[in-house]
Length: 338
Image 1 (cartoon, rainbow, N blue to C red):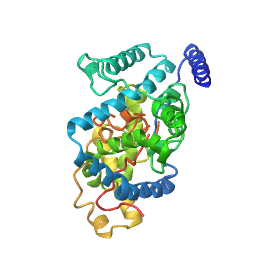
Image 2 (tube, one colour):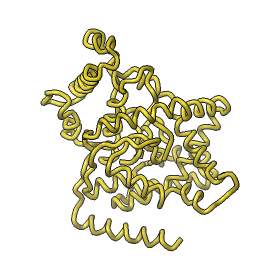
Image 3 (cartoon, helix red, strand yellow):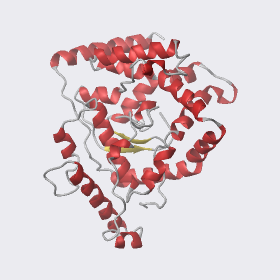
Image 4 (cartoon, helix red, strand yellow):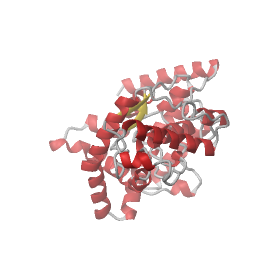
């Protein structure tokens, strides 16, 4: 496809110009001016997840062994590694590009097309990134937080970046575009990827169901995860403190005040909507277990959409670009919003 190399050359040229001018990183911020609309989409995604995505993922787990699921996850992780490699180049990160390229080559050959992970045993661990991170490092602002139907958490910057990654860099997209089988069988590999991705997140369902407001927890977790990716695991302390602006009158920021701010926002939401009178009335006296650091369950890679690329789901459930995709917003035991 001649258009593909031309596009890469254009992006590489722009990257070099940006490198000369200097990168003004635009971090992800906790901005949710469209919360009313986002909550409606979030609730729709939860219903879809409960009705279709989660039952299919549970069925998949029942009929497959852990070893088979690991190989499937390894295969798709490796297949989408070019997403990170190209974006490392666009971010002028030669070390990251070299590490990911080495991992891709080793797992694609010795690892039998990525079914196994010998690169990991050699210390070549994935250094995941995506075009949403690239845009942030080019100085493109995040824009408002956005929940996408069927896809989950994203942003005004992240969603278009996810589409670009998916169309130009995801081999699964080329497969579906270049083949036309009976009964749309060309979509079977992507369907398997989505099912595996959702199955890898089943363990997070209970964590979210214990939250006052799963919407707020998932949003904050996603934004923190994006900051982690943008700053390559080392976001500045001032940025972490600024994530709580508007949540509470806390001038110090940090872990303790961050959790208090999160709980305060959740309680305020319960009281405003009165969706659960008994819950709201007893909230101050019977606070639930304080949620652990949301960044641990945040989806993705992905400035991008939550399931975007497999490894963008969560640090522990790595499979990328937050930002491709079944619903990654597990439904809570009791809905928090109407």
